[in-house]
Length: 245
Image 1 (cartoon, rainbow, N blue to C red):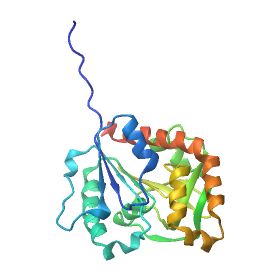
Image 2 (cartoon, rainbow, N blue to C red):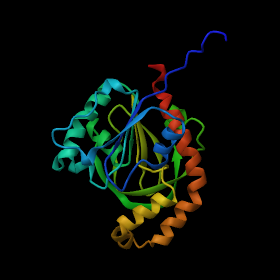
Image 3 (cartoon, one colour):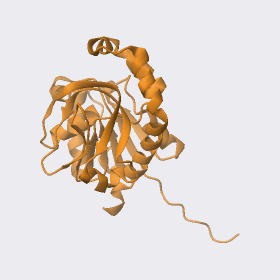
Image 4 (cartoon, rainbow, N blue to C red):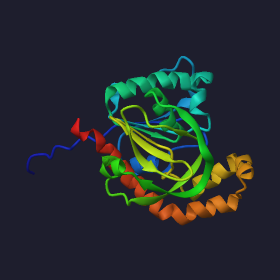
């Protein structure tokens, strides 16, 4: 047999899950299907004396959502601990993706405000790439307009020195880029099963905005095939962000 073939090491990814209900869905499935080395931290379960693994052990980071407002970080012990860790991640210059409140926390950390969206967004929507978004490697191969799923009340503003990458209506700022950090307010990682769990967990919010469980599940199901394709493409692009460092 000829000389052995050297195997290229796979990226090691840290994902931070900030809520029991809101996991990272298709993004997590992507990592598992691609056999990419990854570690999941259930931050909401961490003991006070429990420490995060060193940032240097990972190549990329994904920060998940939570129904807790990013403006309430100081009121929750696990988020205060995570806030300190996020500072280390940002300073590492390694790729970091924040999803919904994950993106809001990173925006605050980078000096941007998190404010109320003009209207609460729940269910299926369409968003659009900005000129900067069409150039950004995170959205390489994306159509200019694409379907997403939403469940949020607040929105981030663009951090100083960053760029708005995606726009929408009624929430005008849907994604931003800042050096090694990307924040997205929308969800591509949701399928019908996840949407069903969210609808059960947050039923009172559906009542408040005048939507039914059946309505938001139908909106997710209609968009699911394209969202699934784009969720995997987003992960492909995200893991490529650090290649040029």
